[in-house]
Length: 406
Image (tube, rainbow, N blue to C red):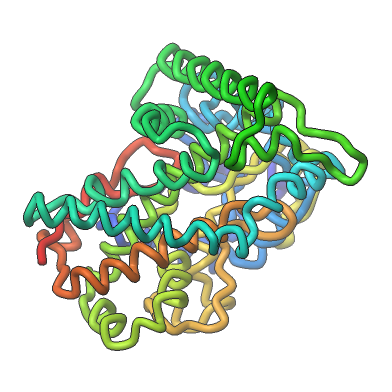
């Protein structure tokens, strides 16, 4: 049976069971239907991939693009535009080829491990102050509200060199742009326009008078041929970094703490051996069962995946979280093993288009874990792990709150 003749096998996303646990369907899909035909809430269909090698192949293959603006691409959201996935932000940044490599070299030089290491002391100091605030509040406290929510947006403001006083509006804008169900198209458009106007003004100010920070550096940065980023590229690069850097990191911080405390033997092991913090962060990234919708890609030409020929125009949804539980890629994948090595998870994507900010995300996660282990060794969940609730509607998965005590 050809791909076009198959019937949809499931509706997506899968939202059953406790928030921290993986859907039961993943194992069956990997085993029996690695290229499943799934229906999104919009009614459009996608090819759903759950095996490690298949997801890695697609994320590394330039034929699979982010061009969800194509007329035959699946609508990710229920509205006509598909939300952030095919907004101006998604289309302004080059998706492949020479243009993408040029953009990546210009931006990536400011997000290297060495440059991120220089930011770590400031991240640690801010984390300490936020923990002070949570202690002053007393327990039980919502770790998401006190730490996971405010820290990443401050980090991104500091990195880009935009006013820290504007962090609340960035957080609000990010929430709207990444939400697929909570806001109307008019609300989305209003926020998008305000965000673009704000960053446009920031870019203009730096063109007149360059400043410290990533945005100021990018205004004057030149590639090997002496070319600079266009104003449009600058604006949407800043927006992409703020949105992705805040929302995704915020949610991973909350889930990381919840996962490590759900079985407190993990927390106790880290207290005994803090040197495991880096590998524990990687394992949390692999083990996370709800990173959100997944990584959608649009197929620009016919391609074969796992023996299935997909026609041009197919929208493919890579479920990296399911791939990270693949028995063919990881030993005992259903277990959280804090010293797992090697750990080639796909949480940051794969290939030439993997997440550009992954060094910074790792630094934030490691710093948070280091500080919490040192400051709050008796930290524990103030509610059963099974009662933790998902943050519904976001393109990136999260928890609505993480109640803790100490």
